[in-house]
Length: 337
Image (cartoon, rainbow, N blue to C red; front, side, top):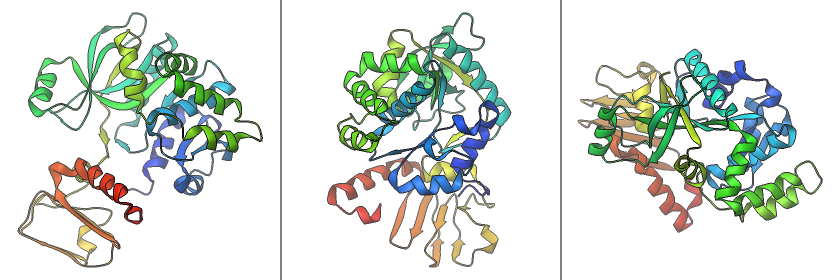
């Protein structure tokens, strides 16, 4: 989808390669994707693909990885990176990670911040305090801020005291697990029980039994917000060409467009006989059904055509597609998801 030979997952692992080795890379993924992950990352040991029985949001996934790592090295520094990010300057990115590792060695839970370039309402923000002594470039995080309105986002950017929350983390596993136990004792207890059985024949039985009882909550809500309130979170401002490819609008921003701002995802527009655009501007078109997709006299839309469904929405509402997915789940129409 991004016009490169590598998937986002492969690009993420390749980007981090200078910091570690394949035996120290863990992938947490769902049952439906485990085989594809193994095919894409052939250098990874099979035991480093950690499969969730069901989605429980980011805290359970990250906590399970932390607990598995802690069994191998109780004081290891761990980074947690989502695979839906585009980063254009890998060298600067690695420099920021190394700075974050210095903060982690001091016992801070580190989150990567992105220097904001506009009043973005689709991202959370980090309210920054002063520098952390003994850790070059590290700032204290005073508070996590939810996705703001445009006016509030504009005030954040003008103040110079806020960063976008990139959702990438670096910490010592023992520090993170201790903070998890303080704030989320039920989740910690469940993860500890799974980890205890991890290298035993009862792993799958315990995982299946315990996993479904874990709270479904993001790591920001579960740990990072509370940790920042007691001075245990730091950040490093980053400027390495970051985009969170969480919706089709963002994908349209980072891919090559024609003279009118139209993007046909995954293909050379000049070689697409099944896409016909006339007097259109700023469209993001995803043609995956083999049918002709034609648009006339429209602008600022996302059009996604797959064999079993068609999505049309304004680009500025692309993040709301999740509400349609939630409604389909409630109706039991899971075959569309």
